Length: 327
Image 1 (cartoon, one colour):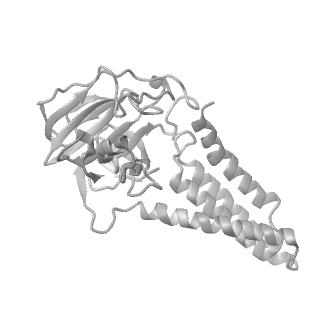
Image 2 (tube, helix red, strand yellow):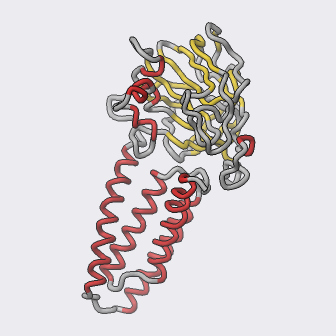
């Protein structure tokens, strides 16, 4: 079991279930203690909903947790109103209340930051792109304006040469495909890339322009092994209206274009794979400016929208023919 699995189990199963069970079966005594515990638990669940990457556990799991939490709070509040118990002044109750108050304030801060990251900052602009995948439902694993909802933002202010070489990806978007149950693969974390719904899906040019770089020489890695020799793996870079668009982690042998080719928006350029630095099959797309010097992917990053919609972590995008809807 990998470290990623342990993190997912801890933050998406053990932590929320423990907090909900604590609130349901061993809540802090006294009205104030119960209220603080209930609010803090709700804030933890909300933080996990917004910041956690709900890929292994289906996207609807945090909503289920919040529904159960709401039922417990509603029932517990009614019981306390009816019982009219005296206030618990014990040290243990006071410490428990203080602990949950601190947790609640921390999660309130994180939640506020995550909500802020769901919008393009004031004064910022976005480049409109066509959605690069075909019919189906997709989950945004990374996307948004800050690091709480988008892991790519870590390269915005690079501290190493390698980060500087990939600064253009700082507002990038990662997409996975899910089925009707919200599952992205047949199993917890299967090793075979082909077990993932998105693997092999056709990738379409999100804009019209000239292909300026392609690479198709990296193998698709077994999950969760990564290949850090070329982080973007097999990829296509297109220059569209003065910006560069990168589509990365493509399937080995699937790239259908060459440098110098002109492509129209919607042209089939390759297939989703699991090449490069990726822990499982997904499509990475980002928009950036052409750098004045240095590595091609070191240019200033730009926000992108899909048909006017700014994609943010854990949102679902459903494609029906040529239509795009976000949720």
